[in-house]
Image (cartoon, rainbow, N blue to C red; front, side):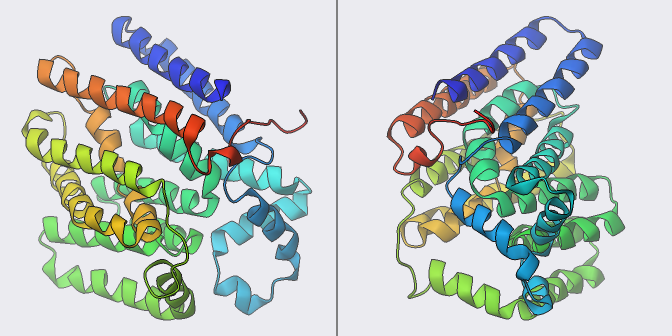
Length: 346
């Protein structure tokens, strides 16, 4: 438990340090160092994470997969496993490659924002610990969705289609955020003739992976539901709270572009729409809401801390996530899979 608390306290401390003492060159070196340390923390864990045993078993079955199984499965994650097999770096190598991609995406997304340290700190309890260390394949899809957001902001459409493909081929649920972001981009820029792409892409991948999506819907939204995700409600409630706050205070985010305001307002409304469903389809909604977590990252990272009301709100949000971590580690139904943290070789 202590290692998780030490990490989040260190990140909060770095925010306070660099918020008070501005030294951009030194801060950049520390930023790179911390991102690398977190990559090691994620990648070199041993038997830590909710689905550890499943990922470990999958690693040993990859060489025996048939071509049809590879094409119809999570292709990017399979390819990373094959690289690990070729290099002989085992499941730890798979996790480290995924961790590097994950933290690089998160660092790129937060870099050059006013409060990146604070945003990194509040991402630690759920985005880093639960998503990247528990749902590795979805963590990959989430990483590519962050790259996709940045590519669309910079109007790099060709690169965007690459990230859309990589996100979907990392985890099937990547189709949700990829289609949503592409549709919002085309709608905002009034490229109505191209909106057909926003329909063709999900139809193509939905048809191509029809069996997989049917299986997901049966188990997580249909009659095949056989368990309730107890962590879904508090996580959904937290991001719902931030969605409401963003809608109320979005005019105060003057350092965000009009496009960014449009995108994250859409994120907020989608969160509000999905939130009630966490009571009936907890696991599915929990997984979909994870893709909308960039809203909380930008809420914190772009917050104007000179504004008293915004500063107070960011303090409340940061405090909630800090105590969420303590509560989850201490009393979470499945937190035993993360506690105690074990480093490979120790």
